[in-house]
Image (cartoon, rainbow, N blue to C red; front, side, top):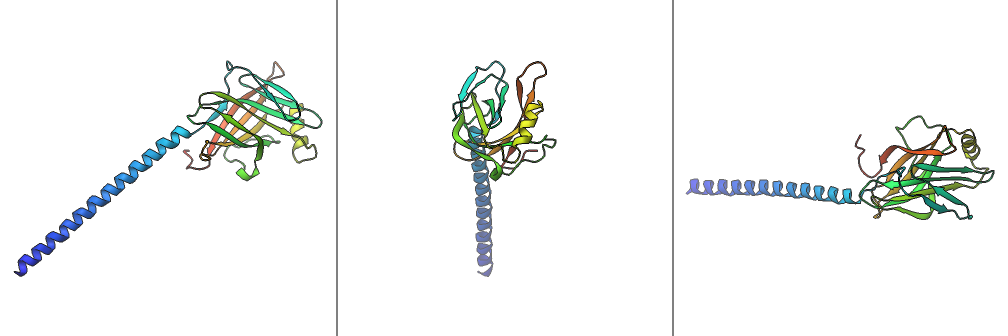
Length: 211
């Protein structure tokens, strides 16, 4: 009788162990499936901004003070007066989700390193909502209107001397997530007064950097 009791206890323990292992494997598989589904969902919402292509249509944009700028594909708008610096870029969203622009950061000095970026709190907030649809074009615009602020004179001097400029854009998806900082360069053309627009690097703020 003692042997039967011991055997029954061992069988019960073995069954419990098998059930526990099966439950663990099932939960781990479900978690893995949930992570895969979440990544697939986020991939469908992720925007990635790049300069518009040269063959993209022109865009005419206006500013709050009535100023107008004509943007051609691949060419940035760089305009400077004694009181205002107007900067703008035609953009193409090469990602699969709508891009919502949050802010911008102009670099008044020459940018050498691409290993770091400004903190999101240091970005200038957009005064109007700017959206760039997936697989379509849009634009970004920003203006400096205080000649006494730090960096205004330095940036105006770089524009006057036709030296390369750098502007960081902060944006995310339409759900408010997947924030990204993209560094754009504005390079003066040697044969015309135009400024060529390019993208240098992308930083993901809300997920591990793939590098």
